[in-house]
Length: 274
Image (cartoon, rainbow, N blue to C red; front, side):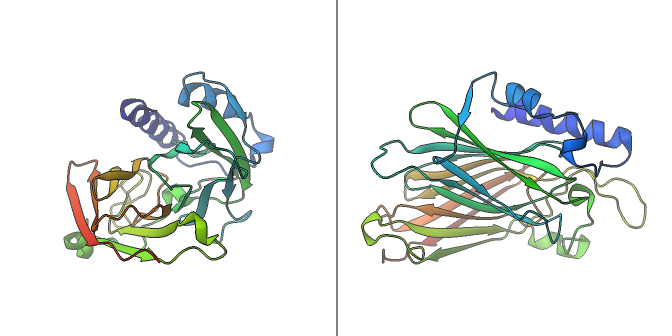
């Protein structure tokens, strides 16, 4: 989904949520299923095939904290399948702006893990676009409530000077990975309030304006590894872990842009492949 369409979905979702005054906490099974309309609008009417065995989504069935719910998207292609993932889209059906993020991915990015806000009991869909040009969908169900309007944990006025700070960490080969596949994992953390537009100032009780990281790009040398087109559902202090294939580059670099037009950059030396 292009950025203009994503921003439109965000603003429509916020307007609806503000009009009703509070998000619903009704189980999705008891309400009309929004997925058919979402699927049509988000993916421009393209068919969605069953992704079982090709892609997967991992989330807790009941969230401990609705403002920071862990989620992992994976490509699970069987041995011998030559297709590769090109993009992952995460849709939290009952959130005010359902599209949490779209991740365009480069070589070796078969896993993405982050933290999201979940506003009410909901189905969550992961849609993978593979190199065959087709879309494959899987879903899970999460019990959580109030994540999009939950107060900020730590990014108050006293922390504004640190907004945009980045940390980058590289990991050894994932546990259980076959030595031949060569994949490693890395993690980027960005200090940013990622205000959803549904949170209230505790003093004035006025809504805090929307203020999120809308675009993130990560390169390994000159190779674009990951591009995130983000929405309001990505939690405060965005934290993204991903797999990648080392290409011998000397460094990684990242660039993030938020909804106020601030640009944040970072660069880190690449550790030797292990």
